[in-house]
Image: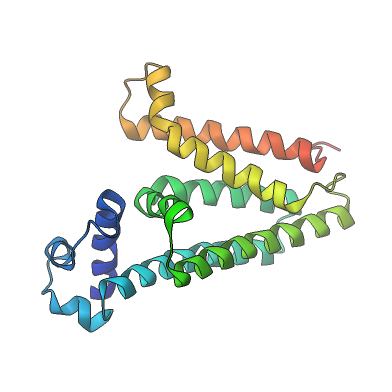
Length: 208
C-alpha cells in the first residue's frame, strides 16, 4: 500500500513527464491522484516543493540500491558492477516517467535544489565506481584502471541514449512485438553490451 503522499507524487510524476513542470497544474495533479487540491498544499506546500520532493524521493531510491551493492561481501567487484548495471537499467526501464523528467532537467533546469540533487547523485555514482575499481585492482579482479568519469559516462551514457532511441531502434528492426516483450529483449541485449564493453575497459577475464 502506498501512502497518500506517495499517491500524489506518482500521479504528478506521470503528468510532469508528459506535460513538463510548467504545463502541469495542481488541479490536474489532484484530479489524477483523486484527492482534494488542498492536500497538495498540506503535504508539499506548493507545486515547486512537490516537484523537488519527487526528485529527492527517486534519487534517494537510486542511491540506496547502489550503497547496498557496494557493501555486499558475497560478491566480487565484477559481480557488483554487473548488479549495478542490471539494477540501473531496470530502474530506467520501469521508471520511464521519472527519467524523462530528469533528462529534461539536465538540459533546462534553473532550480538550484534540482541542480544540487543531480550533482549529488552523479558524485555518489562516481564515488561508488571509484571504491569498486580500487578494490578490484587490489584484489586482481581488474587489471586496467580507466578514468572513473569515463567509466560512469560509458554506463550512464549508453543506457540513456538507448532509452531515448528505443522506439527508433524498434522501427529500424521492423519489430511488431508487444512492447513488454520487446523491452525484455532490448534491455537484456543492452545490459550484455554494456558488460562486454566494461570487461575490456576494466581488464576483467572471466575464467582466469
